[in-house]
Image 1 (spheres, rainbow, N blue to C red):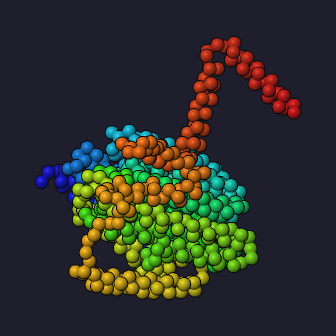
Image 2: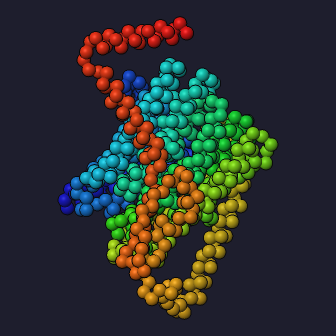
Length: 627
């Protein structure tokens, strides 16, 4: 057997082995509450290596192990050596590097080495995003990602160097007693916020996730952006927080949640739609973290613990169902060759496994019981409702945040009704959709593992409460009251009963209708010859809702309307631009470039002019000093 066949097999074995070891180590740390630390006897960059694994880092490491292994197994079929002889080997190399780099980010307790691991993680992700670099759109998405990543790294470089300058050491740990460090949290929020895709720092995320291979999109959305959340959770615990930090984080969460789902509703590309839902779910996580920070400032009341636990659990939940959805979208792309929803349709008949697993992920991300998305959002809602009953400053923000979180859930449900209806139901809108075939066993197995995780957390949420409690205790540097654990047990019972009722109803319906149903043509509104073009499209389905957000979405419509009694053709197309990127960032960057070009005219090589510039500068400085 040739090397091209043996190498992928051994690579899968090594990835699964490493992921299993990481999973076991993280699970052991979470269950025991122990902290593992290691100091090296040698130096790297002039600093001794200091690694730490506690409940917070183990919590994120567990997600990395599950999604990393599932994505690797999926890629063996999706990005095989046979179909991608040029880039398959590079994919395996950079996938391994990315997993190792993220593992190092989660365990480093030295600021300098954290930066080394962070930059390695960013570069390996760039090479994964641009595996199809022959495509101009892929290259453009890769450049935008790289620029945004380095902007975030620059902010983190300033953060860690300032931290080292003020503390006298690169080693990291709890520093809450040093109040002079509080302003550095804003720099950390900028650097980690860019990586997390917080609105409006999300400009790189939609194009990178849409144009990357689907298994790369899955780990980018499921795990990579969580490295930004890890940084915020970690350093909001270790640093003293400036006044109003919790309100800013919660406010960014509300904006990201609502506008993320609003932009998702306006998309026609299924992967770009899923990318915007990453912005939405990062917002949900930040709502929980932000109100936990507010509660910490007010003495750690119980509602803050609920909000933090919901935000933390949503890190896991989003990682599972978003990776599942991207892998499902990848199966559709693999079979049909298109990501445009309006060119799909009718795939439930030809791709039943993919449709069922994708629908399960869609229900989970929409926060529907009895799945995991409902559990984490229920915890956040519970914390916000408890805060709303108190007559404190937190009540003024908790009630609007709960309303916005509810609006986000409703819009997410509408968005995924659109996706599932347009992609999987109805009649095929193209020949590619009509000829679609189910994906391979390996791809379905990877999706099945993630779907199983969504079901387990949804049906047995009380099992995970001690873990959430332990992570929250490490974050707050205290031991929270464990009496609140009983709140999740009734929810798990209700979810189990609901799941049984759903299964019983489905079985009864199948038994009742078996052999009795007859097929008829769909009601055609009086048309003699209905076609697939008469179905709802992605644009028309969400047209009314997207019109509500027209002030920020700024959709453009190109229409060629019928003019005669018997028109030969007509056309209507809509497009939702990347508003922040195209109408804010790009014009600002162009203005800076024009200013720089103008400044270059002063550099012409004439010494007399340079002396005149110096004299003018001295005069202006003298006037300023006198004033």
